[in-house]
Image (tube, rainbow, N blue to C red; front, side, top):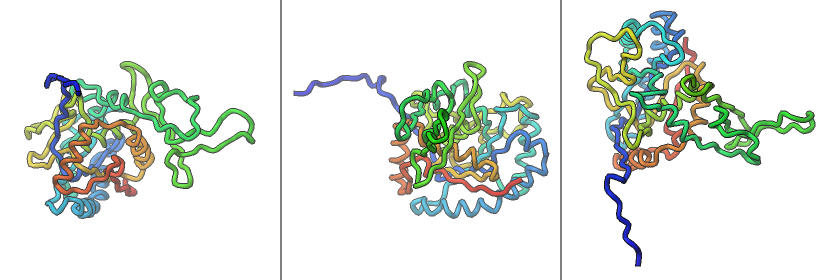
Length: 314
């Protein structure tokens, strides 16, 4: 005879769902210094990105289960590492140059929103979900990521002793030969803690995949632009602003980012990080069930849901 177990309904965690597009296409992520070059740099960026948009959409349409492609576009503005100019000056110029190239930005996101959104410490919550992949032969000599702020995809080579005692690093998931990568996630502590570009970009990917929750509730909900002017201060701009009222959902089954080739090292780090983050199981299950219901082919690995187009941009 088994004992009955009684639980209050309110005690059961409930993971709220988010609407999903088939693809979230990032058509830009420029640093503050890129905006220093003015409209010419923005114009060159969108001109390089434009030819890839149709190709990416055609490829994504192959995995929609025969349905019409739902694709939303987004642009990430770096207001985290330096506060430059103002939304009142930057956003209209950004939208104008995108339109000149025949592109539309559905969602504008502030990079600081990947660190903290609406008072919720988003990056810190993701940091708590880091699960390091122990390298082969690990002895536990290296302190945990929570203490160092660094994470690797392999075991380091020894630094002590003479040259005959040297051993090469070994990538945890190497394909015959290793590529050693050691990633700095943050520096400082407490209020002075600063998260790295690579770590915030990993948070950015999880947001776009609709896989982040706060006690079961979605984080970084889009706020619809009222069509008026933009504020002078970045803090007065919503962290996720929906510019197009008719846009498909911000989050999606898959992501693709159109980026200049100088971003490749950071995005390599992003893929390593995504492999070492324990994603909310309720959110994962919801996405899996919905994709199956729509007959959308969806890889199990999070890293396989992300893709990139790197071009020799400005």
